[in-house]
Length: 469
Image 1 (cartoon, rainbow, N blue to C red):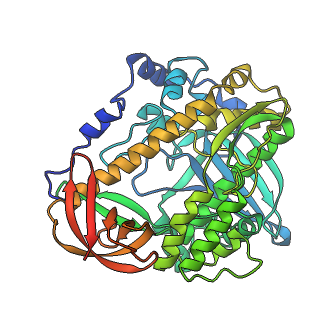
Image 2 (image 1 turned 30 degrees about the vertical axis):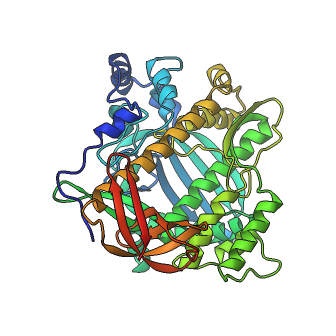
């Protein structure tokens, strides 16, 4: 594996380029410290759920833990999902300094050398985080599911919870593979598979592209790795999606809320994808939907990777849709195959706090708080802006590390997969190290492996150039 030198690794210039805040103002920090000592609600107003053996599943070393999970089997082959979500509203006075700063930021930004958090660490990594062994205020979702994987009843309320274990994805996967899963997630594989099957039938579109990740080097530099999603990643995501879909139903039924929406692809776009599959010699059986077709592909094959890269064109136009009284024309998310709302990551994402308050009010038969109603006209725009910034920062970080990693390897050859090709250039994925780049060359074969030569690296502009070897 190619590594950077210890000297290359300062993201300060990138932070300055995107005007990322370095800290929180004294008024924000003071309000956060005060909230830790004196939360907005007393513990007596919450259900005591500290006896439930919740566990968390997050990346190694994570401290901003939004979700804790417990899955039980029920009579008749069904399931009961207990999903505890960090309750940020217990610490953030509406209209106060914390609230205003969170609206400015929109979401946590993740950089290799440290996060730019949505909330001060005293909350996001401390009093609000569902850390193991700590009693925490939470919003507790309990969703009953039948033997076919469909939800039958949803109950959401405020509670006190205590997580018993903090796991990462690889640890949980290894325990399941060994036949020794933690009891709280022993039913996750069965339920996760059921929900994945239902997602395909709903028409959900999942792009199974491997993720580029940046890891710290023991010498102080950075290493690029490619991490394919394991089964636990997918199953864990299904529990979050299940909860988000339950939240959307509550809001749609009550005719007030904020949804994550995505229009269905135009027929022309689907036909274009069919032609791409044909060009890549991938058989698309007659009568198979886009979702069924993509779910059957082997994501490790070069042709499949190229087609998944093309499929991103079908998933354009995602946004946040708020409503109060009259349902909007679009209430669904084409990538998920149904109505969906963000409610499971309030430590890291602004909109979840407001959507959660709506669900709590609807579930209890109460009026939605006035401060939440007033925010509905602003939150979609705030989230869209922060999503755009987060995508740019993530891409810039990867581009920067790619440039650092490759800077001393100009002239060398690498194996690569052609993802998208025009007449005289192509987008490629170098396999080791996992680097995206542009390659010059006529009629490069999409979905095939080729040899490429690195011709230039511009570290300041974060650009790589390749040619066919």
